[in-house]
Each structure stands twice: as structure tokens, then as C-alpha cells.
Image (cartoon, rainbow, N blue to C red):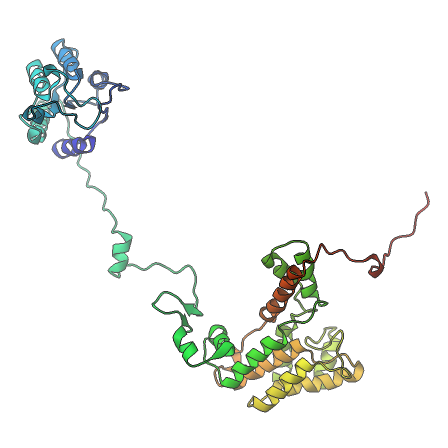
Length: 428
């Protein structure tokens, strides 16, 4: 009711100074006369509008205030609930106080009393706005009210969803992706429906080609990716990554924490030489540098040749993983110039030390460069950076699950495997 009353007053006058919704509770916090008398003493208020209802006798107190001259400002009032007389029995209107327990509490009786006391009372609620306007216009004509300047209402912005649907605006994307799209009826990998991926039997290598390169790679390229996954699926429990994962697993950590601890060891010394090897060998080869010149330059600069060297394998104890990949690349790749260049470097380094072989990281790095340069899907400057961390994840996960299956306890390194190098006792 208060919303509608404010609406009526705003449309028929220059606005509402203050509005209070009291309600019809059985034990209200304030009553009509509390606010009517306050408005009477407020200079900014020029007329008072009261909307009462059936039940209670508070409106009669307003009548007394008007008769006694305590309220001299024009009062427009109406009590709703006049339809109660149409019912044969008492009717409860909405809340506790909206019920006439005697004739004097009916809306009709209170409207009559207010009108007799001097308040402006319409014939019905429909005429309330007209009465308010007439009283307001009379006060304006007498100079009691100086109408406030009509300020045009601010333009309400168009609803965002509506404006976007009409194409008037667009929402900037938070980030971009070119890998897959799950919004439609069917999942898309680089634009290819998932059903088509299975229908054409692309396999894991072909699927990774779509996700990693956004392209459908030749069959030999897909096979090579799958082979890389197979030969790097695990490197045993002794290597840094697997060791860290095992220690965390035995300490009761969860899979993600254990896997992360293993992956954090990947760097130039362990598992992370793939990217650096691809960069170093590619730069040397593309610049026309001979293998010997490349080795000498790296030695002069005091830098390690990434992808060269192994802690266990050597020229006399070759890594069969590298041999398997080498045989496949030689037989299936259209060209493997960078690999041949790396093998020339290996001949030089192994002549100095037998374990300075082209390791599996280095081999995959240079072989992938050859793959991207010769498969017909990429220009030379678009050859991608690689990292073996995706491959290393699998092996570390196996080790985590293996430790849980074996119910291994907390790991503690044995003392006999630690060399304690302490300062000598200093006498005082």
C-alpha cells in the first residue's frame, strides 16, 4: 500500500517529503498521530496524506487533533476496507489489526468521522489521487507551496541480456581457448566432433595432435607421439621425480600433492632438457654451424649441451628407448636433418666420455622439431615448444598408486647412505 500511495502522490504533486509505513500490527511501534504531529511541526511538509484501514481507532485521534487545532495543515485521508459491510460476518483483512470488532472501527465510520473533523476524504479509493491533486493545486495557488523544479528522470540503461541479444553490445571474453568446445550438442576437439574422432579411429596420438596442435597429423606423426608416451611412461623409482612422488606418497600425501612434488624436480638436470635441447640444436643447425663448432662453442661459453648425457646409459650400454624411436624416425619421417645433426654431435661428445649420449629427452626434442618441420602442417617459425612434464606425469602416478597398494610406511633415508660432513669440534 505504501508503494502505491507514494506513486499516487508523486504523480499528482511535486513529490513525497517523507513516507512511513506503520502497518496494522496488534502492538505497533508507532501510531498515526506520532507522525502526523511530527509532520505538522516540520516546515518542509505542506500537506499530510493518511491511508488507514478497517480496524482500530487511531484515526479518531487524528480527528481530535484536527478539531483541537493541533493539526492545521491540510489532511487528505482514506480508510480502506469499506467493502466489509457487504459481508454478512466479520472479515479478517490481511493482518492482526485489520478487523472491525465494533461499528466504530469500520472503514466507513472512520472515513465519515475524518470528513466531519475537516479532513479531505474522497468518495472512494479511486478518487484519492484527484483529491490530493485538488488540495495540492489549491496550496500552490495560495502560494503555500512553491512547486519544485521537475527534473527529468534518468534514463534507465537497457537490460544487459536484451542488449546482447539484439547485438548492440558484446561481453569481452575473460580468456581465449582453441583446444576444445563443449558448448554445443557434441564435444569438439579443434573443431572435430568427438564422434568423428572415434569413427576415424584417430587413436591417442591423433587426439593429442588435435588438442596440442589443432591439426590432424599424418599417421606416422600420431604413431610417434604414442611411442613417446610409451617410452617415457616410467623411468623407474630411482629418478628424481619418481623418488619425490614416492616419498610424498609414503608420507600420506594425496595424489595431486605427490605428483606435484615429483614434477617440481623437472628442470635442466632432470626431465626438462627437451625444450632446451630442441632450441640449442635448432639454433646451431639453422645457423649453419658444424657439429664440432657447436660443441666447441658450448664448451667455450661454459654451457651444457641439453639432451646430451646420462647417469647410467652410455655408448657401451645404449638406451633401448632411444634406439626404438630412432629406428621408427629413420623409417617413417620424410626428413630427419636435425636428428642427424644431433647424432653427429653425439659422436663427438661420446668420444670424450662414453655416457655423453643423446638421451631420450634430447632425442624427443630434436625429433619433434623434425616432425613439425616436415609433416606439412607447420611453418618453421611455428614449431612448438615442448616439455616432457606431460609424459612424466604418467610414471609418477603409477609410482604413487604402487606405494599405496603396497601399503608402504613413512620413508626415512638410511644413515649408511648419508655422508655426514660436519665441522671439526672447536675447543674453547
